[in-house]
Image (cartoon, rainbow, N blue to C red; front, side):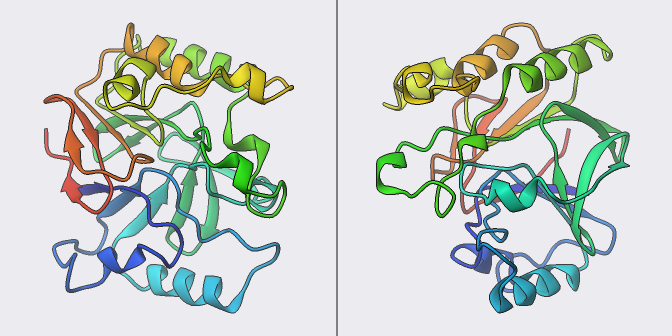
Length: 234
């Protein structure tokens, strides 16, 4: 089985994964976190990080996550890249893997497209390299890679996992992002615009995202997740 949930923000919201709240997963199952994994946060591994990584590794399931905007990207990018489930991953710890941007994985017979990252609306309150990293947004190359990879499967997948949402969906709930090109004087792309773009040509059955701290179905096929843990059952 594959389960999916929203942000865990390191130890802040990880309690939803304890046995009292999530007991149905069995050995060999998968749990996907839709960004803001947050355990790779401090400048170097801390005792708390080691504790929670070990805690996850001892659970029966395999933990997978896309990156959100609250990750230490300076550290995350230094983990070696390997291949699992037909796509590129970074193994973070035993049974804990980062699913990378633009990859397509085949897990339990389901094609899963992943694209992490999001815009930090609270950027002005954060310190670069300490609590905020510019790599929260994708580059043009990452977006082009994702589109090319989708072409290899005929622009058709079963599941899309992201942290942010397409621009039109975000706007429906009052999240009308500023022009990100004016905030970042770099090569970073407007991620909500990119996700909007792929939403118009990719055929998918279910799309799950985090970031907005709400549990809500925008439609039968698009789901915001935070505390809820859903089974991907199609």
